[in-house]
Amino acid sequence: MALAAASRFLIDLRVGPRTLEVAVELVTSVAMACGPGPFPLMLIDNHLPYPAAILQVFGVIRHRRRKRGRGRLKYPDLKPPPGLLAGVVEKVRDPWGNLLGVRTRALFGRRQDIVRQIRRLHIGRQINTAHIERLNGTLRAQQARLARRTRNGSRLAEALQWSSWLWRDLYNWTRPHSSLDGHTPAMALGLADAVWTVRHYARCVVHVSDLQREIWAEERLNWLTSALDARKRKKLLPTS
Image (tube, rainbow, N blue to C red):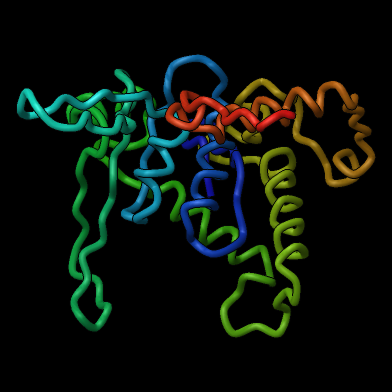
């Protein structure tokens, strides 16, 4: 899941194996929600695909130099752009899986800059993932499909994904938060002026033109394409 911690707005959640492809889709949703402005502050756990996914979406090309004057040129790779901040919360466990403690570190950017941004947004004092962990508990409590040892599991991954997206919309538009002075996450972002009811959400008609859908698809494809892939020249097909 991807959560805007300051407004409690749930950006996206993905159902599936924890692979690089799923992580890239999740980071792309964050990039599209934030727009072309400054880079968002990202607080993540120690899931292995996250660094590569963040670099694929936000990374810029780094031209590496040779250590000596001769030899083959090194292939360029991706590096974090200036201003990108990301902190990691790592759980330390023993060989039996018992939790021993929690460690935090800076993945991209300086640690002091990350902590300063966290305190400016009023989402804690140090690097943490408390808001997303709390949301995980809320999701499991309200979604019978995700409860442990239940008979309400989904037989199809698509059904679980669409059910999760429906819960996301109801969470953002119909659920007031005491930490937001009784407002919903949509109200905190200025997307709504009142708390929606479930009937209001179900009867709200949304018209999206085909042109707008194509624009969104093109924007998503641009975010999914890394800087290295965009730099590579397309091979020309042989012609007679």
